[in-house]
Image 1 (cartoon, rainbow, N blue to C red):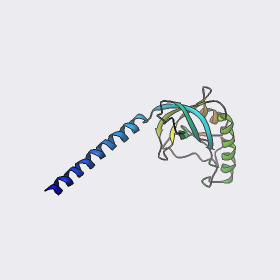
Image 2 (image 1 turned 120 degrees about the vertical axis):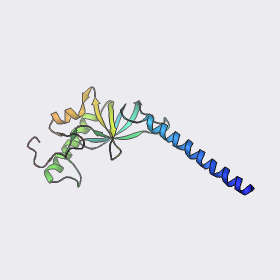
Image 3 (image 1 turned 45 degrees about the vertical axis):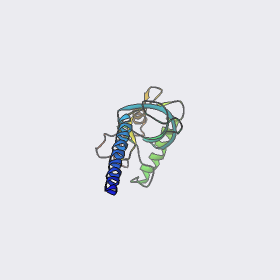
Length: 163
């Protein structure tokens, strides 16, 4: 009989513990559900539309004892690929140039990120502003990115006459 009570209490403890853990996880996740904004300094540019940012402030909850590094995908643009995902040498070359241009745009001062959603690659997908200027619009204006709406087919950077 004592053994049965022990087993029941053990199971009850597990259930209560799992419920508390799920509440804590849910509250942490809901605190960072898009839309939210933050700002910081760019740590590394991946390509012409993606970069890492070291968060310094805003609505994003980052533990102060740790460095909060986020991967950002600029919304509504598509820059040429730089890696093996490039479909042709022209795209790879233009992708390397777009990466350099984005690096030059973002290299100084704070960058503001207005996250619209978290994409399927777990990146913050949103609008990026540097000194009040929309970075995505600037990349398109300079000819280093094409307009792209999420879930639409990607532009063909090998044959597009706009680039």
